[in-house]
Image (cartoon, rainbow, N blue to C red; front, side, top):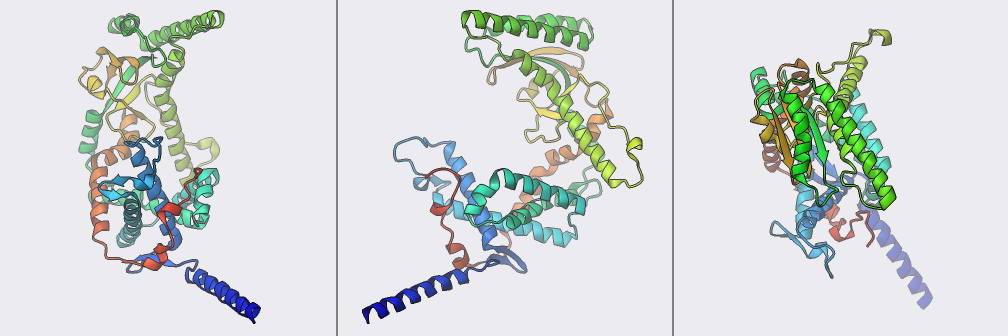
Length: 411
């Protein structure tokens, strides 16, 4: 009889467990706002992302190596860590709904080509890292792809609002002014001395001054740069030989490669951007043969590097430059040696007129729109999101515990 009772109890327990599991269906709704819904899997995704961001924020100020350290003992913005993560996850869910709702209200949607591109990106990130963490937290690829496609609505909505044909289109005059104020074309040579703790910066300045004098006298930059590159390469070889024979470390081990990278980054990125644009042009044309491809746009002077004060630059044409103020105040055609002592790089720059070559305006217009209106657009989305009326299914989200999140690190 006792055995029978135990068997019945066991069966009841198993039945109860399966009943609980059944309660959390595949497409269970965790958060809703009208007809817009966030599933439990989507909520789990945003909870994982919120947890990652919260931990990164803690890392900025806390000693994570201290004995007894625990993220869950920390507070962020006056909130307990777990509460902060859950609140942030909710914000992200409502932001997701905001993008969906605004896109529907505006009557805009991703075209097939753009959607295909985002799906390819989603697949790439999923296969090269995201799947490991997300699957452990109950997030399937289909959910991740859906979220990526939703993220793509941001750019679509921005374009609909501030683009060339947008409801609040930015004038050509304002874009041209922003180019002049926030970007600068330069001829640039640089020496990286970050590997030398005892670098003689005065000596480095004197080294660059030789080339500065040549530029000031009107010598062609390409010739000056060629001599500079050759000198840096010779110095590097000499130091490598000395290091191999004496075991001493090289003072400017990465000078030439760093300079070369600094000088060619802008050009290489420009070429990459041009190829992307060309590829887009080709895909949109069904009548142009491979032999009749439109020639890729290129700058008139490939030696010009474009620097900007815009920290979020993404065009590939410009490079954020912490000492931009020094460059901006320079007159056209004038030179200056700039020491970025924080990053330990010495620059020789000659100011060029970035507005004379139409290539830069064409390539940077989209980025400039974000420079001018990106913050305003983010505020608009945040305000809209905060005003959403929504319902939270506490049972659905209650199954997800911040302390149970798998973040890819060992316990």
